[in-house]
Amino acid sequence: FPTVSAVFELPTLLAGLTGVARGPSAMAICSATLPLNSKDDRDLQSLVLACNKDGMAALRKGKPNEAFEQLKYAESLLMANQEKDTSALLAVTCNNLGCYYKRTGKLHAALSYLRRSLKIEETNKTDHVTVAGTELNICAILSKLEKHDRALSHASRAL
Image (tube, rainbow, N blue to C red; front, side, top):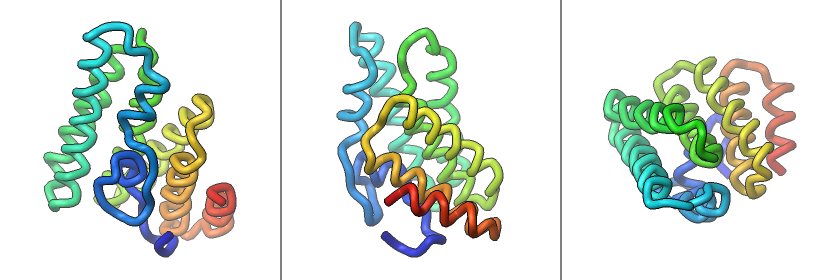
């Protein structure tokens, strides 16, 4: 993995968009945890994943406003559909919002979203590679905030 100051974008871990780490696809992870009982469920999943992918692509292209709109739209779709089990999708979205806020220098907001993602991932017993990526994202933020002991703790948990 790169230095502690690098943030691993969850689409990197999940969808293989860019970066160093690789893991299963977001669709595979979400399919395993989101009951796809209806076309509406599949449509919601596809739309949320597309918003996440487009948002992170915009962020990489230096278009933070576009990225924010896409990611917040994904989050709002999930909040409007809380009666469905969309927790895996929410973890992806929260992680991506954490990456967005880190990239835009809002480290406390980034930390909040990343912790939310981690909590969901732990509850869902998400695969270890994804959880490790989130732990490293948190580590990077804490390191930037000069909370190195706590950063080290998250880095150790990623191993």
